[in-house]
Length: 161
Image (cartoon, rainbow, N blue to C red):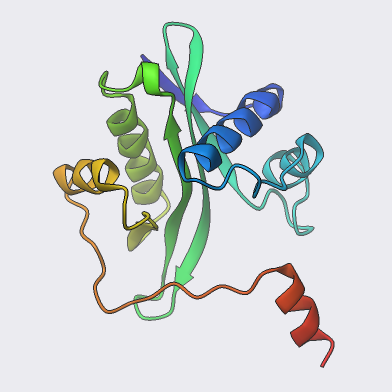
């Protein structure tokens, strides 16, 4: 069992993991990512300053079975960067081997090496197995905060005002 940085050759696997996670989260038709967009934003120029996000691949033996996609953000209150975990997914048949914990441990090492003040991610309110897993690692739910989002259509509308 090991965790390694994703390579461009992993793009088809990463897209498959994104789609599996979307199905698990009851949004199977919501994925708009393509191999081209993943290549651009994970391995290309992203926003024009290098990759916009990064990924890890978790393996059992020599077979990829899990992925974590993350990016850096910034905390104005701490004045330091943070690591935001966008997706963490381990295929069902590969769970209960410690791979998810190993992937989060690697993310914590990355965050520490980059001077991050925190790591954050979102969990659906009904996903109690994930919530319980994160609690065992020392994570805590942020009460009093609600996630707000504008989709592409709302962004376009606001930008055009």
